[in-house]
Amino acid sequence: MSFSRGEALDDSLAALQQQDENLSDDDNAQPDLDGEEAIAVDQEDPLLLAIDDLEGRVVSALDEVKLHPGVRTSAETNVHEELGTLLRPVLEVAAHTGPSIARTYYRGVGSDGVDSAADDVYERTVSDLVLPVLLEMAQSDMIPAKRASSLEFFRHLWQEWHKAGSWLDSTTSGSGTGPHGAGGSSGGGTTVPRHLLKRRKDKRLAREGELLRYWVQASIACTLPGVFTSENAESATASRGIIAASASLRPSLKHIVQRIKDADDRGANRLYAPVMKMVEGVLKKLFLSQQGEAVLSACIKFLEIVILCCSRKPQEAAARRRGQN
Image (tube, rainbow, N blue to C red; front, side, top):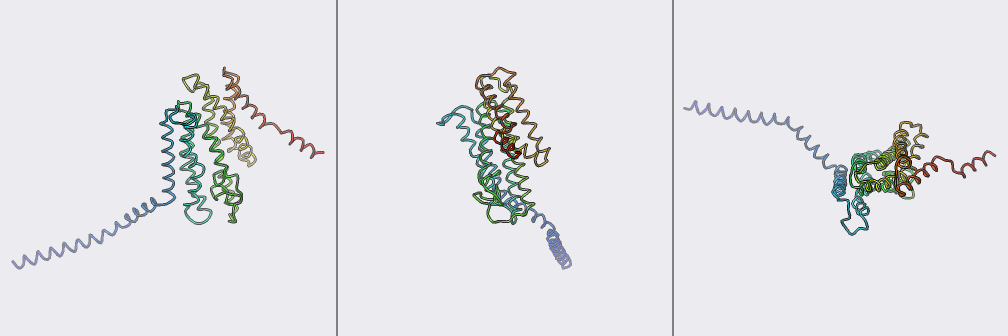
């Protein structure tokens, strides 16, 4: 009996020892916990959280536009102003709030951190979200008012991007230009390496080209014949498409010229091809189809812009002649 009690005691001690060994072996699971904690830290990154918030606001506003019936539903003057009001939050995020978030929550130290944050914000909110969705609306939405509002959005976005602190800031010089500074009359006293300034210039030109390509593609979609089953609706939208094409033509040609000056033939051709397709579409509207006076007038205005952009200004020619004399 005493032997059995001692044997039971030995068994209990052995079981306790085995539990201790299991607890020691369980230390191997600690890296997994560390990995989970690292993921949690990434999820709490202020920049990522801010970008997620921006995406949510943009998606919410775009959903409202997509659900809109395309007719006046409020006290606004007309349906176009009503849709413009719904798209206003998207415009603010894509032009101003996004760059501000990059300047506020950038990671790291110095200019590299700001540039990296600006790239992240731009890619997720503008390049991957706003521009493709608005182009899709211009190309495939069957409600004419929504197509018109998407075309108008690209024009407003181009204007807003050139304001202080935005992606194509034309009001600031030096290191504080665009999303890298708050904007203003000067860029501040921060010294930025030359290679970084060149990279920023290349980024700016790339973003400019991307917006212009989307704008031109949206205009092309609304100049093609037969995009709607309703003849009247198609005609009304076609005139707006030509007006949008006229607005995008001059900056597009200037961008192409800049690419050629930089010996970037590939970059120039990426915009040149759709611009020529846009010109072809307007010419077909003018000469190969029967259109109303409003559409014909818009086509003639478009051709006038083409001629002015491709011809030499008289005062420049006179100045060259004076220089030669």
